[in-house]
Amino acid sequence: MKKIVHLGLACIFIGMVASKPADNQAHGEEEARTFEDLSPEESKARLGEIVEKIDENKDGKVDVDELQRWVEKQQKSYVFKDVDTQWVGHNVDGDDKITFDEYNKTSYSGLPEEELLKLDEAEQIDFKEMIKRDKRRWNGADQNGDGNLNKDEFSAFLHPEEFDHMRDVVIDETMEDIDKNKDGTVSLEEYIGDMFIPENGEEEPDWVKTEREQFGQYRDKNSDGVMDRKEVGDWIMPRDYDHALAEARHLIHESDKDGDKKLTKQEIIDQYDLFVGSQVTDFGEALVKHDEF
Image (cartoon, rainbow, N blue to C red):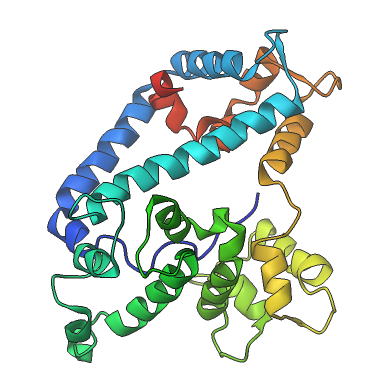
């Protein structure tokens, strides 16, 4: 599974989250309890309902094209919902654009940007770096150059990994986060350290060993021991790579017991854990909110 890193905003809704931590926590716990309260039978029945919707031609089997289209639909649905929610939260005056001043007030504090940049270290939040990072992303998303973001541009700001023209921004953010010694490259130690930090003599799990092999075989293409900026880009946002298709092929490969390159409802249900951990079910959310699908 592709590891998605460093694509979140530097700070989302700091003031809003800080004012309602109990509400957010309670909501998360309620969602978790709802999912856990589903019996195995009910969970599998709901998965079966989703399979019937994926099977567009109603032939009783799901092929790679149907599965790919469904995964793409779930990816877009998540982005649309997130953008809709955050658009309302940040668009203070309710017009057709968001200014950076509006974003600042709803993300950091009510202080003007110039006042935020004057805060000393005692504030414990480096607003200067966060604003610098968000402004770079903002400018990358602002395709018409008017300094504001319409809804499409705001979508690119929130989810740059979904937009080709934001590729450089994503690479910049990834390099900043992983390249600890700031030499312009990512070493094997920095690559692994971003994913796994052992505690109390903990042994390295097998998946980390696999990542070490991946680094040498696929990430570090020129075999110089580090990933340069281009190699980081090929890793984090590979060109000509369809994630939905890769996910569909992986799921069929793991679940196709009779080798016909298609999946029956039973084959999918037999791999319940695999599909609950995939984008097909929005990582299990679709089983809780299955009426939306």
